[in-house]
Length: 256
Image (tube, rainbow, N blue to C red; front, side, top):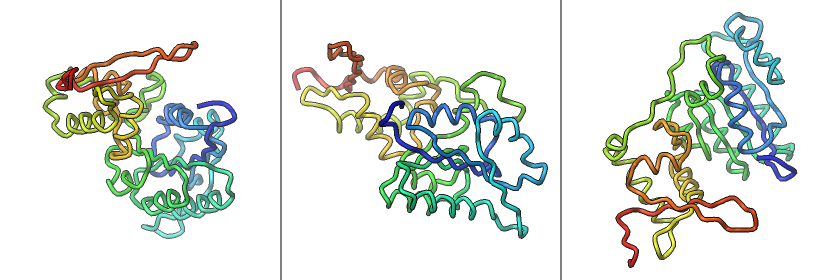
């Protein structure tokens, strides 16, 4: 998303619970939703556990926020992030927040930001507790971002993104099939055709962590095609505008 109307976003990274290798892919993903006017990473930078972050902080112009670990077993970083998030919220300068952590302690923060009308994008590993995932408008698993820009990013041992699932595997996933079919039905016109963008929006509202990359496909259109359960139709609106993709359940008869 670019231009004067791009959403103004604040990116807050819990460096204690995020890998530096995701940074480039993370910020590329954030750019799809708006412009990151604030980029901060929180942690105790006096120790050695976060030394892998140094190059990324410099390369991506991320501001490190020092937070000493005052007491063993107490996460002062979380508290600092929450306080800063509320300060940024009350500044009235932002349209949304990107919270980067796999920690469920940010569940209430995400809910509070949404109560104020802001959009919350969560980023974390697949181990992230479901309450935090559900509290976000959209949640993306960082395993899908790590390899997005090639092998340069990986000194750490991290899980590789899933390989593309075959049609038989996809069709055997009843939850996925029902999710897709219900979303297509909800967004469809009288002929059963639904704009793919609307289908994606409906699914995300129901499942914030839904991502076609979880199944090994870069785009929703690729995933839907791979299931072999839906038709796809690219329609040109004319006037030089980009084609719009529509989809329809193959069970739907043309004369229905």
